[in-house]
Length: 116
Image (cartoon, rainbow, N blue to C red; front, side, top):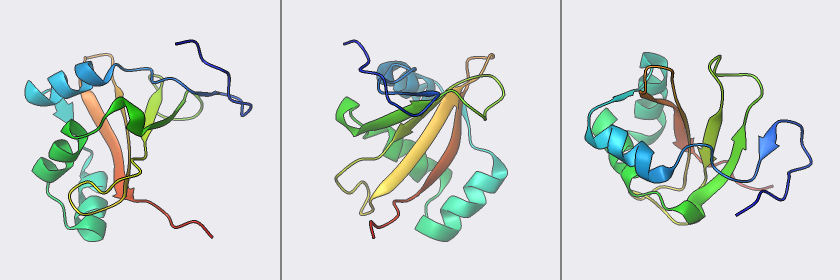
């Protein structure tokens, strides 16, 4: 499916990383969650590393929100997922990338902000 082109610079409408590949990296144990992300996720959601990876395994292509090539991470692209349904009892916002060493880097997992 061709991207329709988001008007914001650097933001695309299609995921950069195939979700099947992301899930395979988790199954293979080829993922990293930065310590600060682990602490924030534990504080906000009460989730362990295992619960974060279980949540990602529950994502579907329809949960994709955007990808962003601007800013971080230094190696490239972040894919953002924002499911409209609760995962593990929470509405979450997750973003991640795959680094040059073929590891999934789970950069953030937190509650979705409420619309004003």
